[in-house]
Each structure stands twice: as structure tokens, then as C-alpha cells.
Length: 176
Image (cartoon, rainbow, N blue to C red; front, side):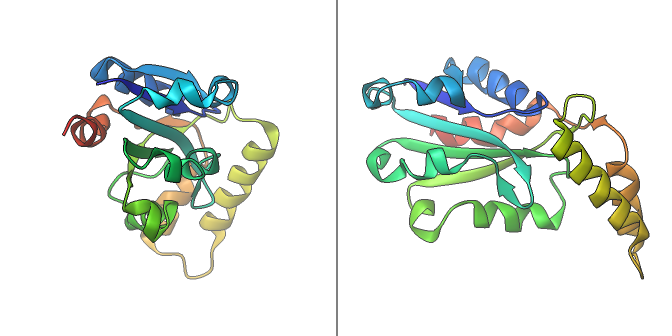
């Protein structure tokens, strides 16, 4: 089975997951910039195409590149994965995954989430400022719950909660 993984990564977490998937599936992994240079023929021979991007504001960054191509790739195994700083068990993850694809797109593709982390050192300035502001807002929220306070504290510094085990559902989906 020929599988192509296309990814967009700002701080390295999505790239790490793309490479783990590439190893697990014996697949080609290319950046979104590289994918945009390819002709349609490059993807035509693939049996499965996976897109990975990072989470920002409840969306998967640059996922429209993938979702716009779903109609022409309907005969392939299609998956989208999102990497973010929230733990997998965060209830907001399920909502974000549901919203990552439209009802029609969900008939042909499946969305997955992999917890990653935050690397302020590798973030571009606008993202770093937005994350710091969000963390501050969460920490100072009036009537903040214990969960809000923990999240605000967690978001205030860099951390890595990624784990190779989170590729298992994606690999299983693509293989079956």
C-alpha cells in the first residue's frame, strides 16, 4: 500500500508524528510546502493520504489544502491528524476533531488527535504572543475552575507530552 503523509509543523511536534507514522506505515512524509510543488499525478498512485497539522484556535492549521482535495481522492484511504498541547482526554479535543471535517468529508476521511506540547522557543512571534495572552487569560479568568487554573499554568511554559503510542489509531485506520 503506497501511503503519503503531508504535514505542516511550526515547532516540530507535528513533524515528529509524521515521521513516526512514516516509519510505522513505510510511507513517504513530505512537508506541505513540498506537497504544493507536486503535480496531481504524484498523489494519484497513492492508496492512502494523510495530512497532519497543528491545532490553533480549534482548527487544524492549513487543513484546507487537504480538505479541498477530498472530492478527487474519494477512492483512497484518507486521514487528517491534528497535534496540539491539550491532553487527548480533554473533552474539547473531540469537538475540534468533529469540526475539522464537514459531514460530507467525514464520509471519506477520518480525523485524529495526537497530544504534542508547546515549544515557545520554536514558535513564531505572533503565535507565541497569542499563546502567552491566552494562558494569562485562562489563569486570570473570573470564577476559574481548578481545571482552568491547571490549564493556564500548563500553557504558561514549554512542555512535551507527545508519545509514539498516539499514532496507533491512525496507523490501524490506514492499514484496515
